[in-house]
Image (tube, rainbow, N blue to C red; front, side, top):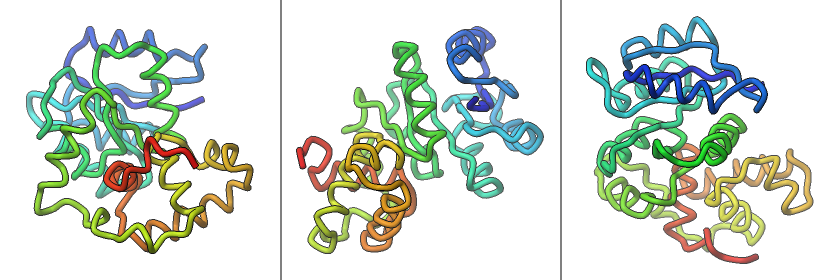
Amino acid sequence: MIRILLVDDQDLVRAGLRGILRERFGFQIVGECDDGSGALPAALECDPDVVLMDVRMRLLDGVAATARLRAERPATPVLALTTFDDDEALAGMLRAGAAGFVLKGVPAEELQRAVRVVAGGGAWLDPAVTSRVLAVYRGAPSAPPGRRGALDVLTERERQVLGLIGRGRTNAEIALALRVGEGTVKTHVNHLFAKLNLRDRAAAVIAAYDHGLVGREF
């Protein structure tokens, strides 16, 4: 059962999310907040596996709330949720340490998949806006320098792992795809993170896109 904290300032949105993320599908809503200012206290109290965070809120927005959460609870992933086609705001969520973003209005199965991926240690970038958001993200002076790492420092297996990370695969899924142990995948992930100077899983997804590995067949 994946434990979720919902942070959204619209009652109807939270009600809809409760309907999609039900226990029958393997999810449990352990807490709710109607503003980003309550996200950290709620996370400390209910200990979620994933925080589903709205980007636009009245008092404290998702970017600031995500930065607070990542500073105090770095092991708790944040998945940004927004109706806004706002590239800068979504890029800001990545800079703050979010594990990815998904647009409101996606099919229920896609949202469930995104939450599962993030809970499993993966990253999820909604393909509908990924290319534009990454362009904004890469152009920021504070963006992690991972894309500057040369791809030739990676082994072929590490390239395969990075490409699968770029497709939103978790370590367990990568292990299954490559027919190796999950521990072996973790070792490859640690090595490629160090070689490319990557901060987190979302930065690895960006590196995979930058190096043309997402659509590549190995």
